[in-house]
Image 1 (spheres, rainbow, N blue to C red):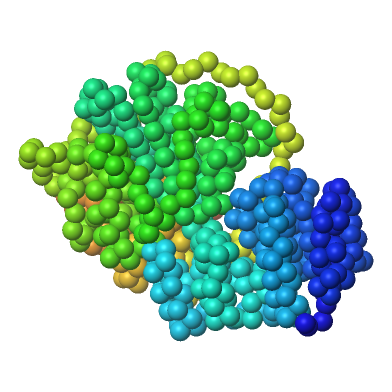
Image 2: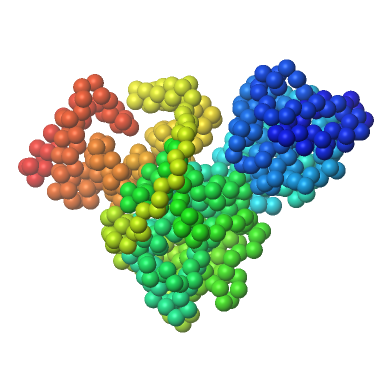
Amino acid sequence: MTSPLQVLIVDRDAELCQALSGLLEASGHRVRCLRGALTLSELRRQTPDLLLIDVPGAEGEEVDLLRRLSLQRSTLHLPIIVTANDPRLEFELLDVFDVLPKPLDEERLLEDLAQLAARRSPPGPYPGLTEVDLALFRDFLVTHSGLHFDRRNALLLERGLQRRMRALRSTGYRDYLGYLEANQESRQELKKLLGLLTIGETYFFRYLAHFELLREVIIPEVISRNRHNRSLRIWSAGCSTGEEPYSLAMLLHAQFPQLRDWRLEILGTDINKRSLAAARAGLYGGRALRATEAAYRDAYFRAEGSHFRIVPEIRAMVHFGYLNLRTGLYPGRAAAQPLDLIFCRNVMIYFQPETTQEIINRMAGVLRPGGYLLLGHAETLLNLRHDFARVQYGGGFVYRLPEPGAPPPPPSGNLAAPKIDPIVRRPVLPPPLPEPPSQAAGGGDQDPPDLAEIYARAVAAFDEENFKTASQNYAILLRHKPEHVGGLVGYGFLLANRGDYQEALEYCQRAQQVDDLYPESYFLMGLIREMEDNPEEALLEYRRALLLDMNLIMPHYALSRVFRRLGRLQEAAREVRNTLRLLERLPAGRKLVYAGSWTPQKLARECRRELEQYAGA
């Protein structure tokens, strides 16, 4: 064999050391044992070739230690093998070489050591993905998961690949691809990689209008239709960390007490096992509750330090499971158990059109006639073959599967537009449950200071119409943090400024997928629609921006411009007055945001001139 490894075994009670020392020494390796906690200083003193550590559970000092080791420059490349009672840790500890569930597979452990002994030197920095390597991984992932990666999201793929490559000490992309192909099932490597490629931020009651529509129209309709079999089945496909299905459970519990004795099923599925583990735990940071009304927070969450946990009654209403939308078996396949609602929001963005077509066909096959499919705001079934009728409501739309024998609604059919008022209107909330003991507060993540500085430089350069410098800084920002909402929107404005409206629209939609409460993204969307000669859509987007922040100045002025174009002069004058009123309140020296060459003084003069014209009309 190659030269032996110096193995440091760490566990609380020395059982692991007693069980494995003889096996490893018989294979030629040198073993040291440490009982109890391992400190960084002790690890530096020991200088092992491999750390073999027992992790009793998903929380505790061992998990905290592993996180610290993955961030320390001196220990970043130290190979780590974990033994664990909980097999789910295999999909959560993705920066270690291997996780061995108990009872231990000794043959697999020896295979691990043989691979590490053959790769003693840590890998150097990995280069970026070449076009050839990108094509190889793209083809593999499309075939086995349906997820599609191209140059637009290659950075996300590259980062996920490099994390797994560092953990496995791969020599390069081709080396890792060979490992992935050989171990996608036997060691679940594909699922581990997907855990790094499909992470997306979400929050409770995202897209409030959908929940208003459920409360006012869809759920009452389903209750009436299913009153004889008294069942309701909902599938949240691509549920991420569980906020969406839990929001559905809270809405049904609070607003529809008549469902308490129904057969109610809410299923959340995802391809990311780490996200599913977080969903089952039901513990969330405060940002996930940013669109949640106080009545819901008080009734359905309990504070634990700086986090909030879903109460057991709501957690019991939702079941979570792993599902690959391209290759897995869908719920509702049995004819006697079709689904009433499918939520598949912000999921289709990962797929190519042919995969989306296949998924939509399969979803139609498991929905009950008259059932609904709800997609994300940036997703449609345009250019796809399907049996759904698109039904408008207010400023949005949903898809409904027609019932046999009934004429399908026309594509422009309308549901009653729900009122956008507070979700809780009927006093049916349960009494508060007892408070559990609070835990110590934890810290929150913050952007690195250098990224904040880069963003500030980009914004300043854009305001000064130094578009080259702005573009360079936005590119740096998004390379380091692709989900930076301000960066996505700012770069979208740059693209729109030079006439690349379709690409600007894509950046705008990406921003809304990260945070759909960011008003500037709707302002940008309105500008794009206006430039595309679609004034009605532009009005809708400008109004959405102002619903989120009535103090934004430029959307008011943009509204006045569109109203004037449509001949609605009274409304145009009203928005000019709104613009002028906000300008007069603006602190001295404050610049306008995304205003092009307009300064506050120039825009105020223009508003007064326009008001004189309206007065004389």
